[in-house]
Amino acid sequence: AGAVELRLKLDQLAVWLGIGQTLPGLFLGRAATPEDTWEGVRRTLLGKLGLQRVLLLEIHPEVLRALAPAGPERVLPHAARLLLETRPWGFCNDPGTDASQPGTTELAAALGLHRFMWSRIARPQGSPVLLAGGFDRGKASFRSPFEDNDAGHFSNAAQHMESLLENALLVAEVERETDQLRQANLTL
Image (cartoon, rainbow, N blue to C red; front, top):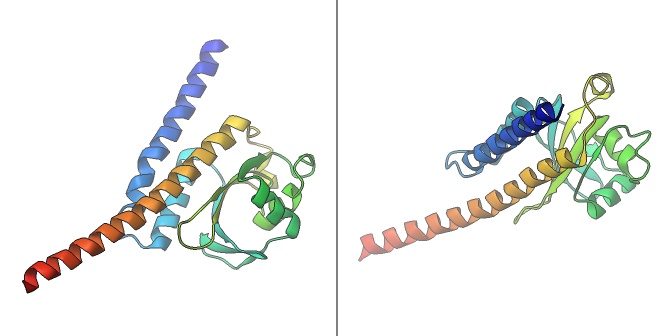
């Protein structure tokens, strides 16, 4: 049993390493639009983690605005907003029984997920992004419950995305300054 557990852990770490290696190409690609980047993140997490749904939503005081996949705004209940402000990441295996985290039931309803992980991504410009991934009620019963380490890896991926967003801004600034320098040299 110990060898099987170790193998599962190694497989899981390999998946997360693969995600970590994929993310820079999504955020630092020169031709990618923000929409393409978020959709690339969504598809990567869907494919590598085997989740039913991955959502990227801009967090506003009263609503969640869809970044990927596209869709209508979702109402952000006050209790869910407080949860996102006080807990930057977490997981829920059953909104009916995870009462130890006030706001989880409301967040589950807003996301349309039953068993899920979430993490908040700070952006240097713009509203923070909620990254959520999981399963609806029908699929959740066929999946293993999430554990702290699952949510921790999910949060690490979100923090990696925060760094990549900051790096993308710096790269764009350096490119602008390089272009200005090039223009000045041509003028001289």
